[in-house]
Image 1 (spheres, rainbow, N blue to C red):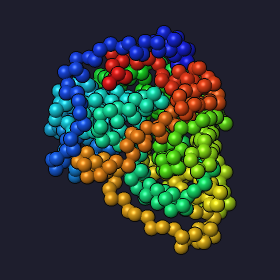
Image 2 (cartoon, helix red, strand yellow):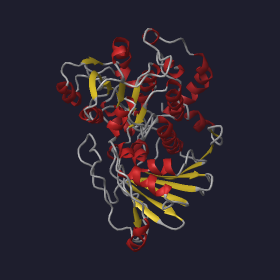
Image 3 (cartoon, helix red, strand yellow):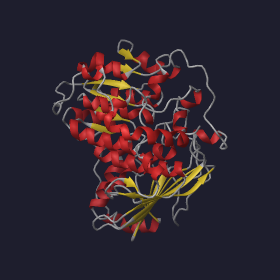
Image 4 (cartoon, helix red, strand yellow):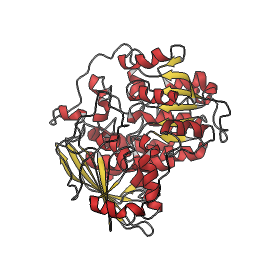
Length: 476
């Protein structure tokens, strides 16, 4: 039975009960709730708990620790016996360890100032919202959460609990961020009408049979893995190795695919500084080998954003898939990548026919850019030469993304990708994934935040009712 079959039944049965979930469980009611805005950390270092310590999580722990601004006081991972968690445990052998973040907060809540959350997309929300409700500052890997609704709740929780928040699209603290901001303020980037964004590298699911008709077969659960906690609030499945260790990104139920993975790095500055907000139309133009379980072999998705103030409407077109290469403008030249892009857990980035990036079309100028902190270039070269003397000086970043978060916890800076900025961006990505999944054009009302032309797609804004025992997080 696929998700759509299951969810139609569950949505009709359970969605009506969303406002009647049970009272908070003991581990939350016993913990210290945030009744007022938390004070900024006065000590030299931030006491940091890390949820997710393998693969990308390991990089996040190391980057935060290497700033010199954090004491690692707790490590939490659903599989402390896995090979990919051993490096961090070996680096911090005396730090307290947990498999369940709920128990970590129950036991150590008073000793934690801030939390990093670097676990699969579907599990971001419960960990992040619980931390915020307890007055803890949070750093959450991108995309912020898996569903539109969870993103909305996280945006609201950040405002309610007045905590410092940062999403882990680290290019938002690099050169691209400051250049884009400066060029918009100086009128270099203006009157943008179209953006092309693309990630054409090989993805995990490209090795799988696109004719899949079900989920993978049941396998024995590794003795060291807490499979129930790994699944979090999502629908329950039998364990299979193709759900974990990065493979989760392949499945609609657990990850946001190539768009959620790379969109947060590629369209982030355009989304913020062009004030794009939420789209009105999301149209899948191409979905190669579409099925109801994992992502297409290739996708082309058109997002239409309306006029904003004196800015014209924008068409943003997303391309992914090894051979789904977008057209590039004359004079494009060489495609480069940011050397600071971290390698995936599987090793080095696969070479692509066109490197991850974007092309931005305004009424007067065309820009090309890469991913993460890669800066923009005006094209063709002759136009760039003509504009050279008109370009303003771009300030240097005062801190990298991890130090920016920790310094903000100490009241010394403000985060550059807070949930108020990162949440709407993640909602755009979630809308794109719904269009991929449903395989139909969607019309979205920006005022009511509803999909108006497809009832099933509108239910996917929220997703299925949480698994038993996980309902409480949606009421914090």
